[in-house]
Length: 334
Figure 1 (cartoon, rainbow, N blue to C red):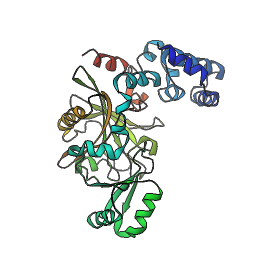
Figure 2 (tube, one colour):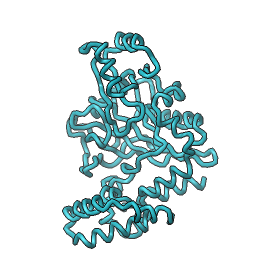
Figure 3 (tube, rainbow, N blue to C red):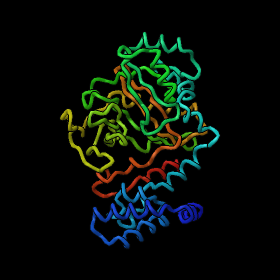
Figure 4 (tube, rainbow, N blue to C red):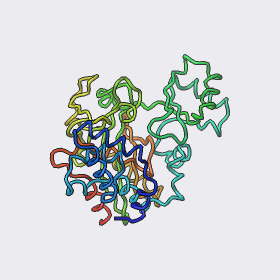
């Protein structure tokens, strides 16, 4: 256990969040709030778990042996600090810089409004009927906007994006029709998490994120769901799960059966992120976001600080509820 994390937890404890989480858990299991509070604090000390870890992973339902196997906030921070040199984070954090570095894997047109001219943008609008605008440093799909250019005045559109700091403009990804059949209103991306140790690449986690509720993004913070990928077979397994931990065997909008779906170009996607990782030798724990087009895989973005919240959603952990921490630690031994 890392002493620094424990000290930080005590000094910077957010008591309002602590009591809110305890109340949420009480609504779910009916247990005494004081005992829940004590258990949340205990999990923070023993397993480096944050309040959201306790709630999202339903740690109230896990025994001590199971809890010890979960990647919590503290453990995830440890992997980031140990494997990723902070001075190189900018290569992935700044999306424009990322697009330049990984140009061979982006495979779509894009512009940085901070470095191009207004005329460049106007020409882009003439070439592309639809575009995606996003901040260069955004997370969780925040301020990602899909715009039909033919319905807009491009001069006003340029000013609108600049005022919103949506400086990154890109061509819409045309995903593989087999993946579009699952849910056609969003690009349903793969999240592939890799750990590289002594030049050995381990694919420690994979899921497909799928849009829902009519939304144009697949992010779980916008109502999407995640389905675990069988990394050996390249197919979806089990059920979909959203942030509310609701389970889906079929997609509610399309009726598509999720389990058993074979992902097109999956091996090529794994090969692509392995090759791409060579461009960032000092960043060895990465969450890659990959889209699959009809021609093959392409990169959406990569994360040097992968969010760990979707790794171990309870619907995905059945039947033994053993977390991924042992798998991650095994990758560091190879």
